[in-house]
Amino acid sequence: MTALTHHGSDREATRTSTRTSLRESLGLPLLPADVVAAYRPRSVELTRRIVERIRAEVAGFAAQGDPKIHLGIDEAIRRAVELFVDTIAGAPTQGTEVFTFYQWVGSYQSTAGLNLDAMRAAHQIATQESWTDLQLAASELGVSAEVVSALGAGLLAYQKRLFEHAVRGFARASARARRDHDEGRAAMLVGLLRGTCPSELVMLAERCSWTLPDEVVVAVTRDTEETTRLASTCTGALSGVQHGRLIVVAAPDVTRALAREVADSTGEAVSLAWSVPPAQTHLACRWASRGLSLLQEGVISTAADGLVEVEQHQDLLCTHADPALRRLLDERELAPLLAQTPKRRMALAETLLLWLQTHHSAPALASELGVHDQTVRHRLRRLRDLFGSRLEDPTQTATLLNALESSMLRWRRAV
Figure 1 (spheres, rainbow, N blue to C red):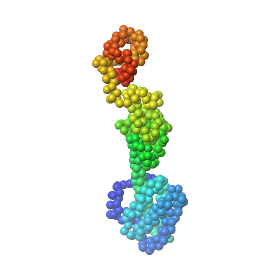
Figure 2 (figure 1 turned 135 degrees about the vertical axis):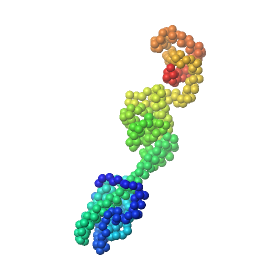
Figure 3 (figure 1 turned 135 degrees about the horizontal axis):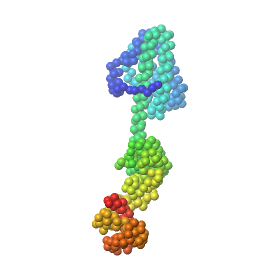
Figure 4 (figure 1 turned 30 degrees about the vertical axis):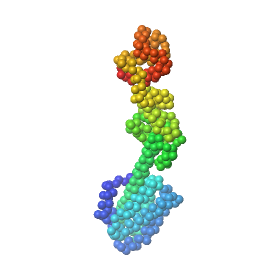
């Protein structure tokens, strides 16, 4: 049976049903009272046959299944058959109560984990049995072929409407379950990123049916339509967007597999923290986020596979832990160079950095820098004038070296 399209809102459908009787809306003929009275006993047997076939043929409604589902199906079919018989008998029926009950049945089936295939199969069985029984009864009771044809068309329209209401209830419950599931996972992710205590993390995980690993790995990448889509399809991972970046939290193997997929599929670099207990997720997120920032600033580079393992750059994470504070400290240590023009400052800084790293002679420095020996000697004299005895103090030279290493990239961009 093809999918059904609902026309109009539920409110509009309700208003329509109150204006028009069920018999009129289905186009059912009005049968003589004696014919209906003769048929009523058969309707009880019809209900029994439909129920038995559904339990025997539809796996979701098997005899050993959910008792509440059985009671709901039994009651739904009984009510539906009785309503149909009352309608062709001329009772002023609208079907509101039965349609509402079918919505509940559909809703409960969604909650119980059944799918639309089971509902569709049950609906087809009910339609087949009802139509077969109606034809036999009409023949026995002397109903004309024209009336039987009208009854058949009305029956199909009736069964279709019952199924639509069941699907509507199923869809609502499924949407509500998805919303609750998504909200639960979002709460779990927020709890992890806020550093929530372990006992509360366990409760949050239980609420959203997420298996809380012994250790997690956090991945951070740029938030794009494709990276977000890939992350959302990974049921084992929690993901969300924060400050324009996609955050992924999962067990180590899950995070790393997803990170490789994102890097391979989108070309986006992915920063990965090292494994930590779930209660330290907020710290790992900070490290991975900082790693991505350092990548974007050119301080570190990605591996060939597009992944940034921040564990391999812990020294740089420490050096650049607080960019504003780091820049303030660097500028204090390197104040004599800040008074120079950008081009002159860069030349002196490159020479000082190489000298602090190697302590090579002027000719060796000149060879590495690609300038004349005299140029290096002139720069070294100028640096001694600017920094004086600090260049002879090992503690001071170490501080200058750190400050230069964190400042050079910014200065190069300024030249």
